[in-house]
Length: 332
Image 1 (tube, rainbow, N blue to C red):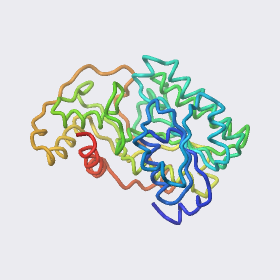
Image 2 (cartoon, rainbow, N blue to C red):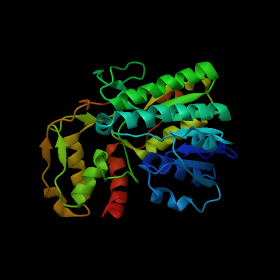
Image 3 (cartoon, rainbow, N blue to C red):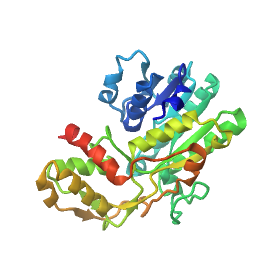
């Protein structure tokens, strides 16, 4: 990361909600390593203490255990904060289909609480995790920010509502916001456990255990898999960009190329076989497609390149190379 770029944040305080989660903890680490003051708000429903344990002794790190569904917790965390990176959310399309109420409470009510708290604390900029699920049933590829379809899940609805609220809080209260539509992020600290685990760490864990991963469908579905360091870069750019035109809009956060699930599993087998040669012989199983899944996802990153100076360094191969080193050490 450009040191001069981050020097803009010296003496500032950045609140990261969901800071003990996968993306949040990577953002905490990057900012802390550059001497930036960080506050982490997390209720540990999906975040993990061990993700942030190395940071607890740092003088520029503060942990607040709290819930974004509680307005007072949000106000406490926003107090004296200059910027917000809002990563806290309840992810997963399948989980939202099973339990739409809790998904809405966290992703909509919690998001609104954070906007109110940020407005009242007069934060300078509110960066939030949006989602590629917002594109819904719009089939054209690549996905361009200004054209979306009809949401296909309760989760997708909540993330679109976030964008609408952010827009209203700018026009009504003059709160500067940037929404980052994440596309299938992967990397270190991503949890492989649980029914709603992301596909890459889940498959890696299964391969390490000599189990057969199960692909939903025939494997032709494709995603724009995005390594965590690209996402960190995008967040830092959104925090530090000095360009009014870049504010109060949304951006795709991706690499800009798609990989089918079959191609993905073949890459995983190839890289993991360097550590355990027997993995290359593990077969892949298939079952029916999941409700709410879109067939293909591919982002245009032209807007982010133009307005946020986004320049992703990791494609799927180089990202998996980095990630698998971490997975192998931490998931065995």
